[in-house]
Amino acid sequence: MAKQRALTGKVMQRLAAVDPRAITAVHPLIGEMNAAQWITFCEYHMRVHLRQLKDVKAASRPST
Image (cartoon, one colour):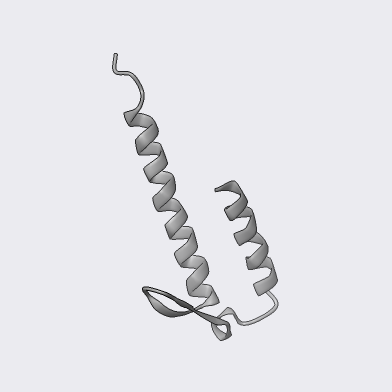
């Protein structure tokens, strides 16, 4: 997850020089999204997985 976050940061730096709305790619389920939407989606998606990891970790602690 740390590697993905670092990569997202690098992408955002590179996009600072262009209009991210002009760059698009197709998500297989959502459809076409521009780069700004992709960044937002990736950040949200990473937060979902982070919450899942925290939940699993909390559930695996022995109860006292």
